[in-house]
Length: 73
Image (cartoon, rainbow, N blue to C red; front, side, top):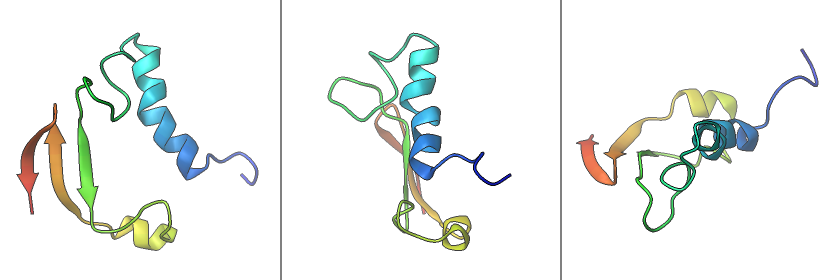
C-alpha cells in the first residue's frame, strides 16, 4: 500500500543495528566499527543508488562472517 513501505535505509537499519539492539547485543553486532564482530557481504553495485530491478540482479562477490572471508565469487 502506498505510504506504508520502508525506505532502503530503514530496511537496512532494521536488519542491522536495530536487530542487534532488540537482542541487547548492540555492543558486539549491528554496525561496522572497530571491536565489533562483522558479518557482511560485498555486492557488485551500490544498492543505495540502483533501481529495484538492478537490486534484484545484484551478485554477491564476497561474504564475511565475524570479519573473516568465507565466500568469494
